[in-house]
Image (tube, rainbow, N blue to C red; front, side):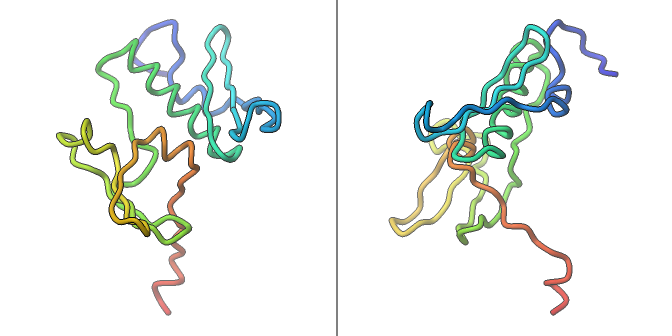
Length: 136
C-alpha cells in the first residue's frame, strides 16, 4: 500500500477510523477527538466535532513526519479562501511562517495571523463554492 515502512501507521489510515469524542462539558469548551490505531493514538482539539477530527488527522500527519522526515505535511486549508464569516485567509510564504504564522486574515482590528493548529482549534472552514452560483 505505502512504500515507507515503520511501525507508525500512514496518516491516511487514520482517516478511516471513527473518532471517539469527549464531552465538552467535562473537558472545558473544546471538543477532543481521539483516533486510535493499535498502539498509536492522536488527539485533536476544536470548537466542534468535525473540527476536532480534522485536527486529529493533522496531528497524525505531523507525527508520521517525525518518523519519516521526507514526508510532506499538507495544509488542511487552500492557499487562499473565504470562511463562513466572510474573512479572507491567505497562506503566508514559507520563509515568513516562523514569524507571521501560517495564514493571515483581516478582521475588525486589522490584519492578523494564525497558525494551522489555531485555525483548527477555531474550526475555520472555507466557505463552500457551488458551481451553479458562478452562472447567475
